[in-house]
Length: 299
Image 1 (spheres, rainbow, N blue to C red):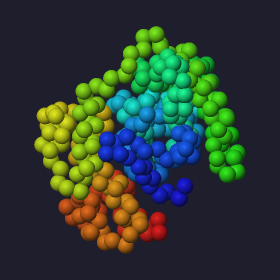
Image 2: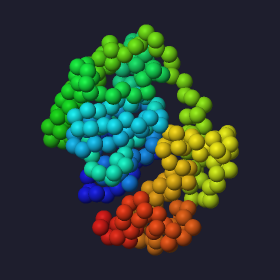
Image 3: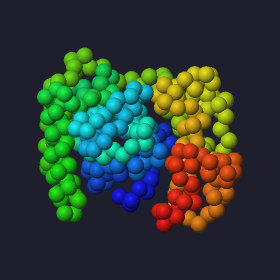
């Protein structure tokens, strides 16, 4: 980690995340994160096929999964199931340290019969978009397994994932999930019309962030009316469409701000702001620091 430098993920146009796996040839991620490394102490709303496990080590944060807010405190955690829209944040802008582990279900796809009967009833189960980890013994077992995995990873001098430990942990965790979730009532997860519409609008913003975006444009891209457009952003992302657009533009502008000598005015216009003063005002509002001061502190 580079001080408090803001973290920028790589996202596709449909806002699925391109995961920077520890080894690109082995689809898992083990990471120790700090919430202060994200803009405005908030991750970017995203989704991916991987199962995500978060364990809070210090502090606390709130996790948003498909618009539902789940408070997480030290010692507990959450599993976010495959293809769910999610992100973590601190409304108080307070630090939170956490372990993040991602497993791709593809790791267990070698046998089609096993995958269909024992993996998909967990990863494709619409009853469980997420699972709060804590309280019950089997959920604490999952927390312990993830902790063990991170300890094994941190002990590796070359930071290579401990592959056998990783597979052992993933299989054990999947067995705990399969044995304790209602897999008999399993129904293939179908994305709701609301989430499909929201994803279309997020994709539109990603494609046109540098241009003027009106509520009419956005609603049309999501095949809904303007009031429904605003309702969906409020319901799932807890902010207005225009606030979401402003934050996205800010995040994208960080690359030019930190890795080029472009003027503030040039950056502002390049990333969809109407001028340097509005860019500075918005930057200060969400990051509590001016663009120029931020550039200097990170140089």
